[in-house]
Length: 89
Image (tube, rainbow, N blue to C red):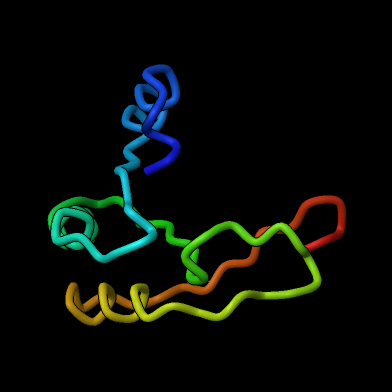
C-alpha cells in the first residue's frame, strides 16, 4: 500500500495492473482482487512469498501463508520464481 500513497506512483502501478495490499493485516479486498485476477483473467499474479521485498540476497525471509491460501482458493498452481541481479538472488 505504501507504493500507492503518491499520485504518480499510484497511477503507474494501477496501469500496470497492480493493486494495493496492506502488509500489516489481511484485508478482504486484497484477497478478492487476487482471486479475481487468477480466476477471471488471463493474467499471472506475482506475489512476494515473504510478504515483502528482501534486501539481503543471501537470506530468504520466512514464507507467509498468503500465497498458498490464495492459490488453493483460486485452484491454481504456484510457480516459484527467484529474482537475480548482478549474480545475486
